[in-house]
Every structure is written in structure tokens, then in C-alpha cells.
Length: 122
Image (tube, one colour):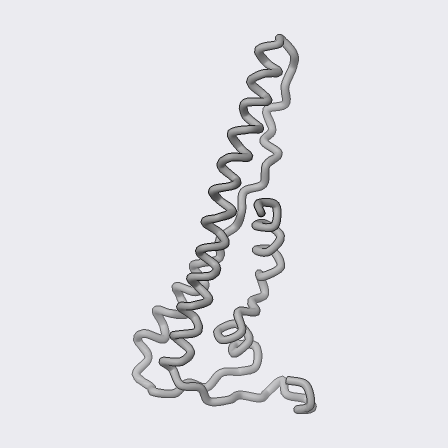
């Protein structure tokens, strides 16, 4: 947090149910973006394979490598956090700045990889 000085040890208390609501919402957004990218990925794969088939039918050499990059899903991170919080007996939970950024603001260390992997598809 800006303006809080050295807050690397800062922890704040959050309502567990509110964290769960936020996590579930973020999971839904992640899943929707991934599913949309996968749908477009399947079309791109089909186009690439048909192009390669056309080249082979012309009697030319063709690379066996598929160049289309498959989108990555990180949904297991959401599922793990949701499962842990669903079993939490406490009404409130202590979160560090990094944890709050992940669970509440949807700012995960893998976010750049995810955004890059789905950016190719819409």
C-alpha cells in the first residue's frame, strides 16, 4: 500500500466470507477468459492443421510442429484457496499484503503468464 511506509510485515483482518465472495467472482472471470481463449484456440489449431494438410496434399514437406500456443489455466489456485477458506472455522482471517492482492485484487504472480497466454485469442 502506498503511503504506509515499509509494509512488508503488514497484515490486516478480513471477513472470511467476503474473501470467499471475491475469490469466487475472480475464479469465474478467470474461467470465462480461459474458456473463451480455449474455444478460439481450437479454431486456430484446426486452421493450422488444415493448412498443414493442404501442404502435404501438394506433395511438399511440412513441419510437424504445432505453432499455436495453448492457453494456460491457473484455476487450481482459486480452487485451493476457496477450499481452504470454506473449511476455515474463523469468521475473520489475517492476510498479508501479498495474500490480499491475490485473494481480493486478483493480482497473482502468474497473472502475466495467464494474460499473455489468452491474449492470442481475442
